[in-house]
Length: 320
Image (tube, rainbow, N blue to C red):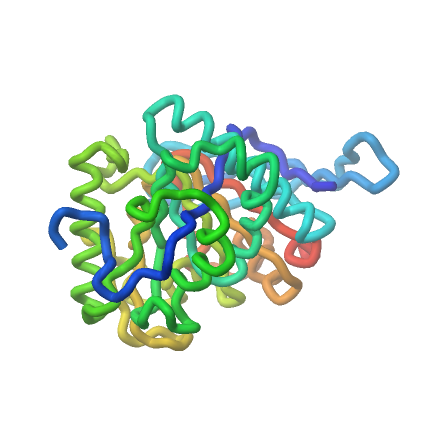
């Protein structure tokens, strides 16, 4: 069962990957050549195991950094177990996949590393494994460690082993970084790939910002409030020109990474933030407007053009 924090959000979709072999270092992109603040009033609702309705507990304010002057829609949902969360995330993703494929013929999905990928597992099971049009999926990474694709730290390897190898996404629609390049060159190469796909009509383009407009961005959050490879206090949080940037001094190993910038993240049509565990409860509380610190964490700067939905387990939401 889930606890909902209301403000309306349209249904959403997720994405799996393809049954393919781990590519070698030369398998990069499938190319021919290689703000201000906005305040939202939301109701904190809770449903017990024996109740069929919701009981209002209290009202609080959620603050979000806005990429544009237009208010975005925000919803927070809390689940009793991670299993319940994964089931809801799968339906949310599958519904959005159907909707967007009907609208534009493609479904562009961005994933992060970490525990998020595990939460996608329900997409690899019936009914979604059979009902989703996987041939229309295009999968990207919001960040990646600059290591070989078969390295234990690779976000690609994690996604492949956990998710992509279990779903029939076309191999050419899975966009890993070129791990033969330096961090800076890999970031530039990935940005070139995105521009190519915008020109081909695969990735949408934001009419507001001119940045890529991905259909769905699925992200986790670190205990320090970082998203992608954008860490608290790091200069990359202020990058507003590049689409893909690189970092050589990540506070978490490995130090060399590439990452989408905040303007790209915030140009998305849908963003799902998936957060589990008591170790992240303090940051969740701050991000949803109940913390006392005025210093904004990276996760507080996530404010997409479209709609933002938080998927929390009860431990992550325990201090709300």
